[in-house]
Length: 237
Image 1 (spheres, rainbow, N blue to C red):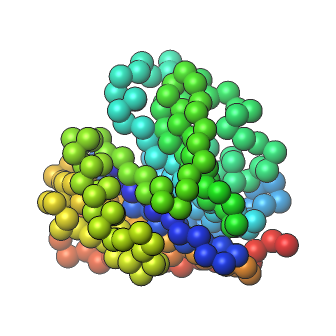
Image 2 (cartoon, rainbow, N blue to C red):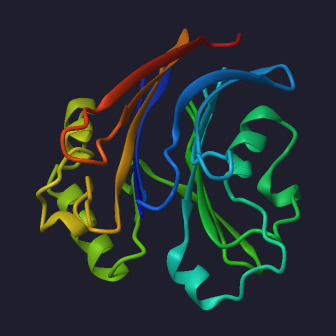
């Protein structure tokens, strides 16, 4: 249950990510700056397992992870599964590592997207047995998943995205990720159900000189306020 969009611009790009989760999960942690293998990273963290769904490094490369609910529901889980949230951190912090060189047998199915400056966006699908790789055009810059009425939820969100026009700007994308009344809350991009909701909205902006991550932790109870955080890193030369 997540929605990812992106838009390239001169020397950089914007990435928006809505993380949707069940309310029984622990609260997530906002983005922090860290260093792994000499590489600077910014990533929010999952409260249950410590992994992440979104990581960007000081080279300006972003890795975004979405669960593949349809495949996960039909495939037997690995006997001793590993958290998929390990993957964006490992990939962002080690340039010599790729999904193609990793043993993925202990991971449940997932989508993973790589966005980088002045490069074609790449997407991988791990189905539990094999890995598929794709190159995405700028017209294919939406990926959304849902564990609830998946086909309808995805179709409605795709249609709402198409209604933005052929080349939505950054402000339009930002508004899209905050659209909570489109076709009813369970199907909206900013979704809400009794058992689950959009937990956070992240915005990564990579420029020629820096990496900026804006983050909004959404209210879970009536009366709570949206919590905002902004972190940044200089781009490595």
